[in-house]
Length: 531
Image (cartoon, rainbow, N blue to C red; front, side, top):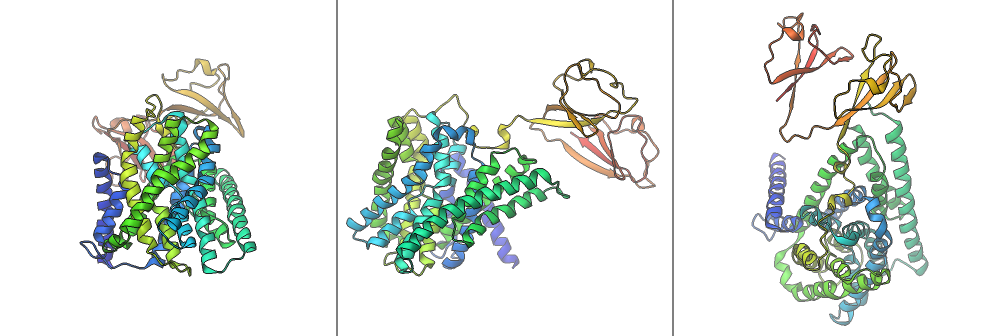
């Protein structure tokens, strides 16, 4: 067990280091994770034996849920609204058209059986959200005509359609589905998935706004549980869990939430870990020695998918909207295949459906080709097509907490002897850069005007810009026991030095903001700031 945990720690550290290297060299991050998995795999240098496809399918499907959720949670709907129709068309009809064209190519040109050809088209029909997100963010690519938002929404929402096509075709190939059953499958996938995503979002919003969790961080744990529910609940009834998780994320992420900053940071880290897990595991699962056998058909499919099927679907769907040709060319080139395609290929392997060809390694090669060639050249293509918008910020495309104004709020109690009592707000000596934004008077919440008078017992809330200095400010605690030399002294009598200041005292259930006259007592907990 310790050796296993040590290996996992080494792999994660290598992924983190490789992430840094990929940003410096301009190599797509997810490609390095796959190559790292191949390095550790059976045919690699470390030679870890792993060929458990059912286990890999379960792990990757669970990881994909969090990637789908965060794809929706991070989408800025205000920025995406102008291209929402185009994005939805590309993520639905675009996937169907790409899958059908690719399937027909496999059948008539490569002479693969019809339904097996359609299966290859289905699993490669969607684009990869993680790859697109990482390239747009790492390269800070702001694109004209809301193209960055279009790519984000399309890549984040088209996996459910690809999953549905894959499930339908596998049912047909297994001989377990009639025409009526297929119709119900489509109905269940769409309706149950949409309804579940909406209900989970409404329930989560209601809980997060109405209930205060007793322990800090439990709201994040609650959201994690709801993410799992959003996928599992519709799946039990035959619905599309990925669609539900994505809708849940986009509805939750575009509403004001308490502690949104913590949620963003947590899921940003979790999603990064899930991406590492999926791509490393898929690389570990592959056998490079089997690649030569599928090299020719896989390369032909990748070329057709990149230069024919994807562009045809994009031009057909975007031309009616009078989208500029250069935008359509960039959207067509940015259709990266990724983790979802390989996960769906694994799903095909573990299903009862019979396939003659090595679909896993065919799709694996297509993904490698797409990420390495298309992914690396997206910045170059955007520049050559004059699609880079230097006056915009790509981070506005994403619903990150950081794009909000960095403001902190402080509550101050107003006692009967406070110097602000009976003074209007306009006469208060507030420091520059600070604003009185709210008055709490009993059960009443008042937004003050200049003539609003402060009364005894009021609680006032003031705002100021958050501290954003790169130099870290450290906090330390000191608990005073009965023998402590500070007990019985005032803060003014202490010699703390120039770099320390007592900013807070915990005294039993009370929290005190001290001044120089505050006398210290036994069992006080002093919170000190140190620069």
